Each structure stands twice: as structure tokens, then as C-alpha cells.
Length: 152
Image (cartoon, rainbow, N blue to C red; front, side, top):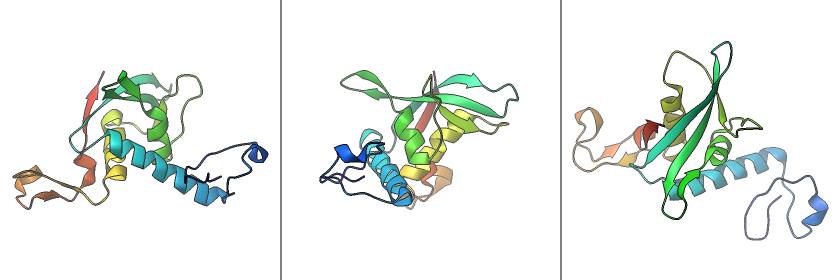
């Protein structure tokens, strides 16, 4: 449902939100994703560092639960795993809130941040001077490298 101020919410009780406009599931999901991306772009400008914590590895080794944290001036550290999961359309674990990431054979925390970065900056980003791989155009066309990653 979309509130009068444009905010999109998911609810099992639409009767409570009489002033809200109903949306299709598909449109609501995409609006929630874009809302999460907007919030994350505000918190994560180009060059920001995203920290990840490995919460669990499945017995088969084919999936992981990873929490995503960012530094915040007001609270110190902010867990943005829910926003990241929404922006990327990934699932979250019920108990620890970690983002469930499938796959193996590479650094899955880096992969999660790379995918997040591509989602936030799909058209690339400006660089000062020479960019990755010696490119002097002043623009990096791969938005996946806009954010930095560190494990905790």
C-alpha cells in the first residue's frame, strides 16, 4: 500500500490504512526496492565502506547468512541488512536478520557489497583523476566498485 506521502508499506491489515492506496504485489515490491535503494544511497555515498559479519554457513557450504553494517554519526554502527535484502530482493533469516546469500567459491561478503553497489549506482560514478585500470575519463562505468568492503 502507498501512503499519501509516497511511502510504501507492506501490511496484512489494509483496513487500518484507509487513506493508503492499494498496489499490485509486483508494483509494491518494486516500489519497496526503490525506497530501500534511496535510503541506502543517502547513507552510502560513493567511496563509503560497508562492513559485513558472517553469521552462519550452511552445512553444504552453498549459502551464508551475512549481516551488513555501516558507520553512523548518531548511533555509531547501523545494521542495514534489512534495507540491503530489500534492495537486492534477497531473503533474510528470521532470527539473526542476516541476508541469505547463495553460492560459494569466492568472497561472498565482497559479492554482496558489489551487488549492492551495482544496485545503488547502476550507471557508474564519478572518479577524481585516474579511475580503476588507468581509465582517465573521470567516470567509472561499473557501479559495483562505488563502495568499499571490510569484514568484521
